[in-house]
Structures are given as structure tokens and as C-alpha cells.
Image 1 (cartoon, protein in one colour):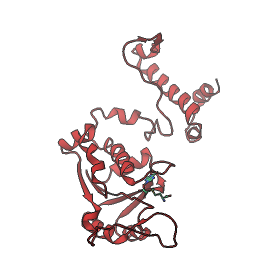
Image 2 (tube, helix red, strand yellow; image 1 turned 90 degrees about the vertical axis):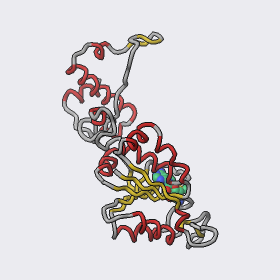
Image 3 (cartoon, protein in one colour; image 1 turned 30 degrees about the vertical axis):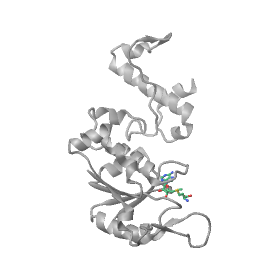
Length: 243
Ligand code: SAM
């Protein structure tokens, strides 16, 4: 899978060569291109922003450098991702949709964002997703793009060692959709007076799976109660949550 990123701060993307993503790149599963938007600016000062129409504070990214850059980087099979706080929420399900693509191109906004005509124009050329990573405002799209690339990459077949772990994760479509994962433990069995639950040491797969689902339900009810409305609860689940 190929990721191309267009940004005015290419240095933000050095982490792509570290850890899981770096290993997946070395194994040929992922490839990354990081491009400086200013290479497509056309004046001596390599300007990429201008004052907003209608007035107000801040600057807006000019459409012309974006148009030149995207014309060069996009192919007919690409999907264009534009991070923005006003986008559709980026969720595990959306990460799965993006992981099915061969080529993602990310356009990192700065200042007050990118002139809207850029998204309007490319919507008739390729699939365009304007996505938000949460209800807060970052200084630029770079960190949001790192978040999305990491979430998408772990869903690309072969990137994670153990494919099982993806379907057991919080929010994974299927059994875990709309649920957060419960607590996890490793050795030693006792630490500072705190014990690992006996069931996890029992070797009984059915009971362990039941315990994990119960803990996911309890934790979701405590920390993300709004999600539970979307979970299909059976009579066991209902009794558990009422107790
Ligand atoms: N004026 C914009 C607004 O209120 O929606 C905020 C612009 S923000 C300072 C600059 C850039 O950061 C955005 O164009 C976007 O690329 C990125 N950004 C900020 N918050 C984000 C979020 N929650 N999700 C995705 N991208 C975000």
C-alpha cells in the first residue's frame, strides 16, 4: 500500500521509519512519499497562503499550489484524505475502509485550512474524504495524518504479526464494534498486592472469552456509556450491566 503526504513540514514524518511502520516499509508492505507543498509554489517566496475572503484573522492555504501538487501526485485510483476538524469522524471502521485502498494521498492543512475549492474540484476527480480525528483543534494536519496512517497500516494484511489481535481490539468491526477493550495483564501473577484475575490463569478458553466480553461491557458502560446504545445486548449482557 502506498501513502503520499503533502505538507509544508515534511520533517513531521520522520516517525514513519520507526517501529511497526518502518518494519512494514522495509518488508515492502508499505511505501511512503513525503512531499513539500512549497515545491509547487510558483513565486520567489514559495508562498502557500493568503488572507481570507470575507476578512477575519489567520490565513488560508492558496488553491494553486495544492492544485499543482495534487495533479502530480494523484492517480485515477487514489483516494484523497484531507484532515479537518469539520470532517466526518475518523473511526476504526473508517480506518478499515481506507486500508482497502492501494493509494492514499494526504493533504495536510495549516493556518485556517485549505481553500474549499480544492476539495470541491478533486471530488469530481477521485474519492475525497474530509476526516476529523476528534473534537479539538490542532495547529496542522500533520499529527492527524500520522494518527490515521498508523491506524490504517495496522489493518493492512501482514503488517501485524498476529492478525487475531486486530479483531479483538477496541472498536473492531464485529464482536468489539462499539466496545472498548477490558483490562489486560501479564506476569507476575501478584504485583504490589494486586492479583491477576484467576479466570485468566485457568486455561479455560470459553470462560476467558466470556470474562473478556463482560469486562469490555463493564468498561464501556463506565467510560463510554454513549457507545452502549449501539451494542446488541443479550439477556446475559443486560443482567451484567444491571448488577
Ligand atoms: N479554522 C479551522 C476550524 O476551525 O475548523 C481549524 C484549522 S487548524 C488550526 C489547521 C489544520 O489543522 C486544519 O486545516 C487541519 O488540517 C488540521 N486539524 C486541526 N484539528 C484537526 C482535527 N481535529 N482533525 C483533523 N485535522 C485537524
